[in-house]
Length: 208
Picture 1 (tube, rainbow, N blue to C red):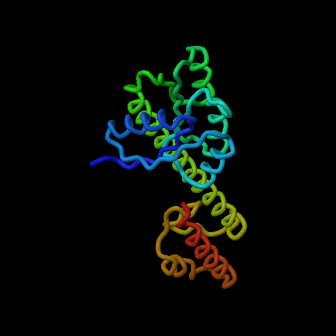
Picture 2: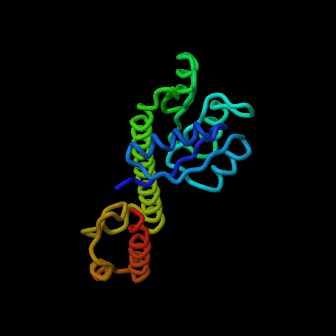
Picture 3: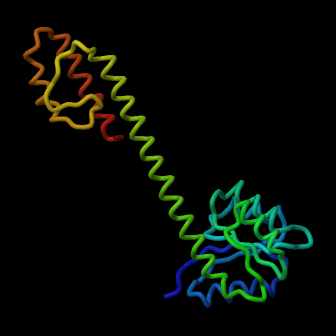
């Protein structure tokens, strides 16, 4: 079954765009695609839709692939970008890749287009997973810092140590059991303080 693909083509030629779409379909994809040929149209497409890959011609009458790459990086982050051209020097192609293009393909030999596209999509997905992991780690770190701050405010160093509850609120026994464990303390104010602390930490523990 053909794989779905959202494809944005930056190209001034209808015929060349159709050739690109045919090659993508030959590679086992069922693309939903759009063609733009100006900076304004491309910007609107990037702002209105999310694309799996962008394929851009290097040279067009009113636009070019380098400017298209800049727009993608500014408005669509790490969306895979592949440059195509009837002719492009190795120096220009290398410069484009240095600036964030995944690859550059010659129009007279599109056999490398789908493999390059799949490689770039895979790398973009890995990057997205890595960013999500980093976000979760930072979120956990922030929650731990909040829990420690709560403890420092509510339970100073001389507070009683309760079994089963660590400093950051990561592991704990049921609140009711801990409150009962604290009930032996002489100060009712201290017991209320411990109870409040435990309930707040349990609230934040869902973030950790």
